[in-house]
Structure formats: C-alpha cells, structure tokens
Image (cartoon, rainbow, N blue to C red; front, side, top):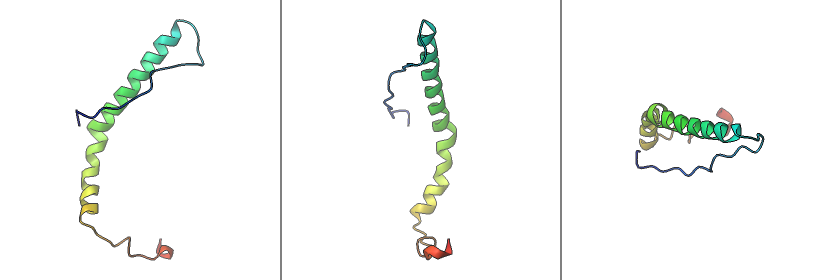
Amino acid sequence: MADTCFSFLPPQDTHRSGSRNATVSVASYAGRISATAYFYRYELPKIVPWLQVVKAADLTCAQMDEDEF
C-alpha cells in the first residue's frame, strides 16, 4: 500500500484572504494527508475478514427475495 499514489487538488481556500489563507490551506491539506494515512493504517486492514466472506461466494443474501429484507 505504500506505493499507492493519490491525486489531490492543490490546497485552495477561496473564502479567506490575506497571509492566513496559505497557512490554513497548508494545514488543511496536511490534515487530509494524515487522515488518509490513518485510514490506511487502521481502518483498511479491517476489511480483510469481509473480503474473505465475499471470496467464499456465500450466496445466502443473494438468494433471498427482496421482500425478506
């Protein structure tokens, strides 16, 4: 996963003006990068058990009638 590359738009803040504009945008961009790193490190690995269920091709839910949901 370390080789995965995301394309983000450059940080822009059109609602603020002045020198604080650049600081807020850089901080916001850094926060997005940190949130992405957290997701990859802690949340994404949790899907492995779910993927194993799908891989097993258990058709229990697929074979149910729509009214049963």
